[in-house]
Image (cartoon, rainbow, N blue to C red; front, side):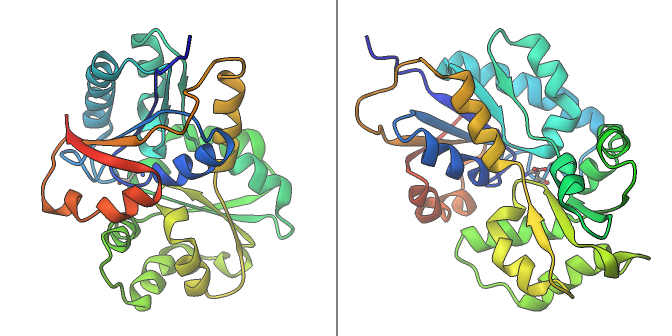
Amino acid sequence: MTDTRPVLFFDSGVGGLSVLGPTRALLPHASIVYAADSAGFPYGTRSDADIAARVPALLGRLTERYHPRLIVIACNTASTIALAAVRAALDLPVVGTVPAIKPAAQQSGTRVIGVLGTPATVRQTYVDDLAARFAGDCVVLRHGSAELVKLAEAKLRGEPVEPAAYREALDGLFGQEGGGEIDIVVNACTHFPLIAQELSQAAPHPVRFIDGGPGIARRIAHLTAGQSWPETSPPGKAVFTRLGHAERALEPALSGFGLDTIEAL
Ligand code: DGL
Protein backbone atom coordinates (compact mmCIF):
# COMPACT_ATOMS: atom_id res chain seq x y z
CA MET A 1 0.00 0.00 0.00
CA THR A 2 1.24 3.50 -0.81
CA ASP A 3 2.45 5.47 2.16
CA THR A 4 1.03 8.98 1.80
CA ARG A 5 2.49 10.40 5.02
CA PRO A 6 4.36 13.63 4.23
CA VAL A 7 7.75 14.92 5.18
CA LEU A 8 7.16 18.02 7.30
CA PHE A 9 9.56 20.93 6.82
CA PHE A 10 9.59 23.66 9.45
CA ASP A 11 11.08 27.16 9.51
CA SER A 12 10.10 30.62 10.72
CA GLY A 13 9.60 31.70 7.10
CA VAL A 14 10.71 30.75 3.60
CA GLY A 15 14.28 29.75 4.56
CA GLY A 16 13.47 26.06 4.64
CA LEU A 17 12.88 26.17 0.89
CA SER A 18 16.68 26.04 0.53
CA VAL A 19 16.51 22.58 2.13
CA LEU A 20 13.31 21.56 0.36
CA GLY A 21 14.87 22.27 -3.07
CA PRO A 22 17.64 19.66 -2.83
CA THR A 23 15.24 17.23 -1.10
CA ARG A 24 12.76 17.44 -3.98
CA ALA A 25 15.61 16.79 -6.42
CA LEU A 26 16.47 13.55 -4.58
CA LEU A 27 12.93 12.46 -3.68
CA PRO A 28 10.62 13.83 -6.38
CA HIS A 29 7.64 11.76 -5.23
CA ALA A 30 7.76 12.75 -1.58
CA SER A 31 4.61 14.37 -0.22
CA ILE A 32 5.57 17.63 1.40
CA VAL A 33 4.03 19.87 4.04
CA TYR A 34 6.05 23.05 4.47
CA ALA A 35 5.23 24.88 7.70
CA ALA A 36 6.33 28.47 8.36
CA ASP A 37 5.84 30.13 11.73
CA SER A 38 5.00 33.48 10.17
CA ALA A 39 3.33 34.61 13.43
CA GLY A 40 6.65 34.10 15.22
CA PHE A 41 8.91 35.41 12.45
CA PRO A 42 11.72 36.41 12.72
CA TYR A 43 13.31 33.92 15.10
CA GLY A 44 16.78 35.43 14.89
CA THR A 45 15.96 38.38 17.17
CA ARG A 46 13.96 36.35 19.73
CA SER A 47 15.26 35.10 23.05
CA ASP A 48 16.46 31.51 23.45
CA ALA A 49 13.70 30.89 26.00
CA ASP A 50 11.05 32.06 23.59
CA ILE A 51 12.26 29.77 20.78
CA ALA A 52 12.74 26.84 23.19
CA ALA A 53 9.09 27.15 24.26
CA ARG A 54 7.59 27.90 20.87
CA VAL A 55 9.19 25.36 18.52
CA PRO A 56 8.40 22.04 20.30
CA ALA A 57 4.82 23.18 20.97
CA LEU A 58 4.22 24.11 17.35
CA LEU A 59 5.79 20.93 16.02
CA GLY A 60 3.52 18.96 18.35
CA ARG A 61 0.45 20.64 16.84
CA LEU A 62 1.73 20.19 13.30
CA THR A 63 2.41 16.49 13.94
CA GLU A 64 -1.12 15.96 15.22
CA ARG A 65 -2.56 17.66 12.20
CA TYR A 66 -0.41 16.25 9.37
CA HIS A 67 0.93 12.92 10.70
CA PRO A 68 4.35 13.25 9.06
CA ARG A 69 6.76 10.31 8.63
CA LEU A 70 9.70 12.61 9.40
CA ILE A 71 10.26 16.21 10.49
CA VAL A 72 12.95 18.49 9.10
CA ILE A 73 13.69 21.54 11.22
CA ALA A 74 14.93 23.57 8.27
CA CYS A 75 16.08 26.44 10.45
CA ASN A 76 19.46 26.84 12.15
CA THR A 77 18.08 29.07 14.88
CA ALA A 78 15.37 26.59 15.90
CA SER A 79 17.72 23.59 15.54
CA THR A 80 20.63 24.97 17.57
CA ILE A 81 18.21 25.89 20.39
CA ALA A 82 15.39 23.35 20.34
CA LEU A 83 16.41 20.21 18.41
CA ALA A 84 17.02 18.09 21.51
CA ALA A 85 13.71 19.11 23.08
CA VAL A 86 11.77 18.34 19.90
CA ARG A 87 13.41 14.92 19.61
CA ALA A 88 12.56 14.17 23.23
CA ALA A 89 8.93 15.23 22.79
CA LEU A 90 8.07 13.50 19.51
CA ASP A 91 8.17 9.85 18.64
CA LEU A 92 9.39 10.20 15.04
CA PRO A 93 12.65 10.99 13.27
CA VAL A 94 13.64 14.65 13.44
CA VAL A 95 16.41 16.02 11.22
CA GLY A 96 17.95 19.34 12.22
CA THR A 97 19.96 21.99 10.42
CA VAL A 98 23.21 23.03 12.02
CA PRO A 99 25.97 25.29 10.66
CA ALA A 100 28.21 23.49 8.13
CA ILE A 101 31.43 24.37 10.01
CA LYS A 102 32.95 20.92 9.57
CA PRO A 103 32.98 20.91 5.73
CA ALA A 104 34.06 24.58 5.76
CA ALA A 105 37.10 23.71 7.87
CA GLN A 106 37.90 20.78 5.57
CA GLN A 107 37.88 23.06 2.54
CA SER A 108 39.39 26.32 3.78
CA GLY A 109 42.83 27.15 2.43
CA THR A 110 43.37 30.37 4.41
CA ARG A 111 42.08 28.78 7.66
CA VAL A 112 39.79 31.78 8.16
CA ILE A 113 36.10 30.89 7.99
CA GLY A 114 33.05 33.11 8.15
CA VAL A 115 29.84 31.98 9.84
CA LEU A 116 26.86 34.01 8.74
CA GLY A 117 23.67 33.29 10.65
CA THR A 118 20.98 35.01 12.66
CA PRO A 119 21.92 36.92 15.84
CA ALA A 120 20.37 34.07 17.87
CA THR A 121 22.29 31.31 16.09
CA VAL A 122 25.76 32.85 16.17
CA ARG A 123 25.64 33.31 19.95
CA GLN A 124 24.83 29.63 20.67
CA THR A 125 27.25 27.40 22.55
CA TYR A 126 26.29 24.80 19.92
CA VAL A 127 28.30 26.92 17.45
CA ASP A 128 31.22 27.23 19.93
CA ASP A 129 31.25 23.44 20.18
CA LEU A 130 31.19 22.91 16.39
CA ALA A 131 34.04 25.42 15.97
CA ALA A 132 36.11 23.79 18.74
CA ARG A 133 35.50 20.24 17.48
CA PHE A 134 35.89 20.72 13.75
CA ALA A 135 37.73 24.00 13.16
CA GLY A 136 40.20 24.12 16.04
CA ASP A 137 43.02 25.31 13.76
CA CYS A 138 40.88 27.96 12.02
CA VAL A 139 39.89 31.49 12.91
CA VAL A 140 36.09 31.41 12.91
CA LEU A 141 34.54 34.85 12.45
CA ARG A 142 30.82 35.08 13.12
CA HIS A 143 28.18 37.58 12.19
CA GLY A 144 24.46 37.56 12.93
CA SER A 145 22.29 39.45 10.46
CA ALA A 146 18.55 39.82 10.90
CA GLU A 147 18.58 42.15 7.91
CA LEU A 148 19.60 39.44 5.42
CA VAL A 149 16.67 37.31 6.57
CA LYS A 150 14.30 40.17 5.76
CA LEU A 151 15.97 40.69 2.38
CA ALA A 152 15.51 37.01 1.48
CA GLU A 153 11.81 37.15 2.38
CA ALA A 154 11.43 40.37 0.34
CA LYS A 155 13.13 38.76 -2.67
CA LEU A 156 10.74 35.80 -2.57
CA ARG A 157 7.77 38.15 -2.36
CA GLY A 158 9.07 39.63 -5.63
CA GLU A 159 10.09 42.96 -4.08
CA PRO A 160 13.15 44.80 -5.43
CA VAL A 161 16.18 44.98 -3.12
CA GLU A 162 19.09 47.43 -3.56
CA PRO A 163 22.49 45.66 -3.89
CA ALA A 164 23.88 48.13 -1.32
CA ALA A 165 21.67 46.50 1.32
CA TYR A 166 23.53 43.19 0.88
CA ARG A 167 26.94 44.91 0.96
CA GLU A 168 26.07 46.70 4.20
CA ALA A 169 24.88 43.48 5.82
CA LEU A 170 28.06 41.63 4.80
CA ASP A 171 30.28 44.37 6.17
CA GLY A 172 29.55 43.07 9.66
CA LEU A 173 31.41 39.88 8.71
CA PHE A 174 34.13 40.97 6.30
CA GLY A 175 34.79 44.21 8.19
CA GLN A 176 36.01 42.28 11.25
CA GLU A 177 39.74 41.94 11.89
CA GLY A 178 40.94 39.12 9.63
CA GLY A 179 37.80 39.33 7.49
CA GLY A 180 39.89 40.00 4.38
CA GLU A 181 41.27 36.46 4.63
CA ILE A 182 37.97 34.62 4.76
CA ASP A 183 37.80 32.13 1.89
CA ILE A 184 34.66 30.20 2.89
CA VAL A 185 31.43 31.48 4.40
CA VAL A 186 29.03 29.08 6.08
CA ASN A 187 25.46 30.10 5.36
CA ALA A 188 24.26 29.28 8.87
CA CYS A 189 20.73 30.45 8.21
CA THR A 190 18.51 28.62 5.73
CA HIS A 191 17.30 31.92 4.29
CA PHE A 192 20.74 32.79 2.93
CA PRO A 193 21.14 30.21 0.12
CA LEU A 194 17.99 31.81 -1.34
CA ILE A 195 20.06 34.98 -1.89
CA ALA A 196 23.26 33.15 -2.86
CA GLN A 197 23.88 35.13 -6.02
CA GLU A 198 23.30 38.48 -4.31
CA LEU A 199 25.67 37.51 -1.48
CA SER A 200 28.40 36.39 -3.89
CA GLN A 201 28.12 39.66 -5.79
CA ALA A 202 28.15 41.74 -2.60
CA ALA A 203 31.19 40.05 -1.01
CA PRO A 204 34.25 42.34 -1.04
CA HIS A 205 36.47 39.56 -2.46
CA PRO A 206 35.71 36.16 -4.02
CA VAL A 207 34.63 33.59 -1.42
CA ARG A 208 32.77 30.29 -1.52
CA PHE A 209 29.46 30.04 0.35
CA ILE A 210 28.41 26.65 1.65
CA ASP A 211 25.30 25.40 3.42
CA GLY A 212 23.87 22.19 4.79
CA GLY A 213 20.91 21.81 2.37
CA PRO A 214 22.30 19.08 0.06
CA GLY A 215 23.64 17.08 3.04
CA ILE A 216 20.28 17.26 4.82
CA ALA A 217 18.53 16.08 1.64
CA ARG A 218 20.83 13.03 1.55
CA ARG A 219 20.10 12.38 5.22
CA ILE A 220 16.34 12.47 4.57
CA ALA A 221 16.76 10.07 1.64
CA HIS A 222 18.80 7.76 3.87
CA LEU A 223 16.27 7.81 6.72
CA THR A 224 13.35 7.10 4.38
CA ALA A 225 15.15 4.51 2.24
CA GLY A 226 12.88 1.53 1.57
CA GLN A 227 9.69 3.46 2.38
CA SER A 228 7.03 3.83 -0.29
CA TRP A 229 5.95 7.16 -1.80
CA PRO A 230 2.92 8.13 -3.88
CA GLU A 231 3.32 7.03 -7.51
CA THR A 232 3.12 10.50 -8.96
CA SER A 233 4.52 13.64 -7.42
CA PRO A 234 1.71 14.93 -5.16
CA PRO A 235 1.07 18.69 -4.84
CA GLY A 236 2.81 20.08 -1.77
CA LYS A 237 1.17 22.22 0.86
CA ALA A 238 2.43 25.36 2.63
CA VAL A 239 1.05 26.07 6.11
CA PHE A 240 1.45 29.41 7.87
CA THR A 241 0.80 30.26 11.50
CA ARG A 242 -0.43 33.64 10.25
CA LEU A 243 -1.78 33.94 6.73
CA GLY A 244 -2.01 37.53 5.52
CA HIS A 245 -0.96 39.61 2.51
CA ALA A 246 2.76 39.09 3.06
CA GLU A 247 2.34 35.31 3.01
CA ARG A 248 -0.03 35.39 0.01
CA ALA A 249 2.62 37.38 -1.87
CA LEU A 250 4.89 34.34 -1.56
CA GLU A 251 2.53 32.16 -3.61
CA PRO A 252 4.50 32.25 -6.92
CA ALA A 253 7.79 31.45 -5.13
CA LEU A 254 6.17 28.61 -3.16
CA SER A 255 4.66 27.15 -6.27
CA GLY A 256 8.16 27.14 -7.84
CA PHE A 257 9.04 24.65 -5.07
CA GLY A 258 5.96 22.52 -5.77
CA LEU A 259 3.88 23.99 -2.92
CA ASP A 260 0.61 24.59 -4.70
CA THR A 261 -1.82 25.01 -1.81
CA ILE A 262 -1.61 27.38 1.14
CA GLU A 263 -3.45 27.16 4.42
CA ALA A 264 -3.38 28.58 7.95
CA LEU A 265 -2.55 26.43 10.97
N1 DGL B 1 15.78 30.50 8.61
C1 DGL B 1 16.14 30.60 9.96
C2 DGL B 1 17.50 30.04 10.26
O1 DGL B 1 17.98 29.17 9.57
C3 DGL B 1 15.77 31.80 10.79
C4 DGL B 1 15.36 33.10 10.20
C5 DGL B 1 14.70 34.02 11.25
O2 DGL B 1 13.50 33.84 11.46
O3 DGL B 1 15.38 34.85 11.83
O4 DGL B 1 18.13 30.40 11.23
